[in-house]
Length: 400
Image (spheres, rainbow, N blue to C red):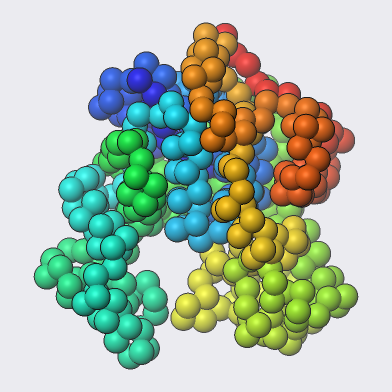
C-alpha cells in the first residue's frame, strides 16, 4: 500500500515529521511517497534550500520516493496547483491514499464542502454572485455563500484556514478525476500557518523557521528534525531565499523598462488591468514588499502578486499553464530508497512520463517545450544561488 503526501518541506520540520508518522499510522502503508515543490514554492518565492537537498531530507525522514511537482503547477492558484498535482498522483496508478494535514480533520465535513464547490448548485452560485456584486472579495464571498447555502455556520471559518483550503482542493480534484485514491485528513499539530508561535513540542511554522534562517539565527535548529539538521550541516549550503528575492525584484524592475503591458498581460496570474498598473509603478520601488504593496487590492493577494512577479521573471505565461494542463503529464524523480525502487515499476507509464534523467527525456521528447523551459527556469535558480552546476546534470538521489 502506498500513501502520498503533497508538500514543500521548506524546510522539513517537526510538524512535517508528525504528519509523516501519523500518515503511516493511520493508513498502515508500507511505502511513503511525497511529491514536493521544486526550487520555487507556491507562495511565489524561491525555496530556502534546493529541491535535491530537500528531497534527501525527506528520504532520511521516512519517505521512500520523492517526486517533483512541475513548476507550472507550483506557481499557480491553489486550485490549479492541487488539481494538477493530484492528477499526477492519480496517473501514477500506484497511490492508495493521499494524506494531508489540516486544521479540521473531519473528512466528512471537508468532503461536504468540496462537493458543494465542485458541483456548484444553482442556489450556491446565485448567492456567490450576490456577495461579490455587493463588494465582498471572492474568498469572503465563497465563505458566506457556503454558510448560507448549507446553513452550517462553521463552513466559513473552516475555509478561511490555509491548510483546510488545500485539503478541500485536494478532495475536489480527486472527485473531478473520479480517482480511486482515498483522502486521509491528519489533524494539524503545532503553530498555525505563518504564525510566530512555538508550541511545547518545538513545532512551529515553516515561515518562522525561514525567517530565523534568513536572520542567521541558529535557534532554528531547535525546530527541524535531526535528518534536516545533519543534511544541511553536511553540505554547508548557503540558504538562497533573502538574496534571491532581492535579485528577482531587480530583474522584475528591469523588465518594466524593456517590456510593455502586452508582455505582462500574458504572464500567469496577470491581466491587462494589472499589466497597466505594473507599467505605471514608481521607479523608486525596489523591494518585493514595496512592489506588492503598490499592486495589492481586495482580490489581488500578496501570494498571487508574488507569483506574478516571479512568473514575469521566469516568463511563465497563461498559455504555458493551459498547455501543461492538457498535455500528457510528466513528473521528475528526485530521489528514492533503493529497496523501494520496484514500486515505480508498477506505474502506468502510458498515462504519465516519469523522468529519471533530464538529458535522456529531452532527447527522446525534443518537442516538449515546457520541459525545456523548466530546465532553464531551474538553471536560473542555480545561477542566482551562485551554483556552477546545471539542472540537466543533476542525478537522482538514492539512499539505502
